[in-house]
Length: 156
Image (tube, rainbow, N blue to C red; front, side, top):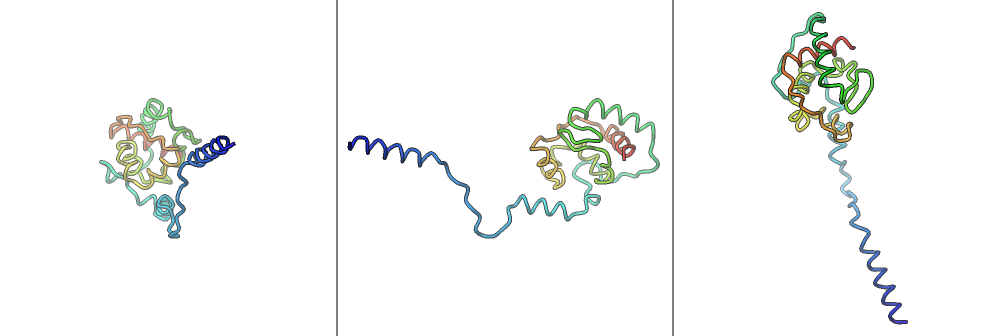
C-alpha cells in the first residue's frame, strides 16, 4: 500500500514539473515593446520615411513607358516568387505602393533589404506581417530599382 502511495506521489510530482515555465505577467502596466513599435510606425508619416540605403533623393516626372517595360521585366524575373501586384502573397501587394511609401524608401528596400529589415520601422513591421519571412536580396542594381519604381508607379 505504501509503495502505491509513493508511486502515485512520484507521478504527481513528475506531472507537475512537466508544465514548463509560464510566461510572467507584466505587472508594471507597461505595453509590450512590439505594440509601442507598431504604434510609432502607425503615427509616423510613411511618405516622409526615405529608408536606409544609397538612395537619398528621387525626382519623378511623367511616367516613362520605357522604364515601365524594363521594370516589368525585372519584376517578373526577380520579384514574382514573393510579390503579386494586386494581392498579398509572401510579401505585400505592390499595387499602390507608391502612394504608401516614398520613392526613396521603395528603391532602398529593393537595393538594401537586409539593413532595411534590421533598422527601418516600416520594414520591420512588414517583416512581422510576413510571418518573419525576410525579403531576399535579389542583387538589384540602382537602374533596375529605378525601373521597378516606374513599373510600380504605372500600377497605381
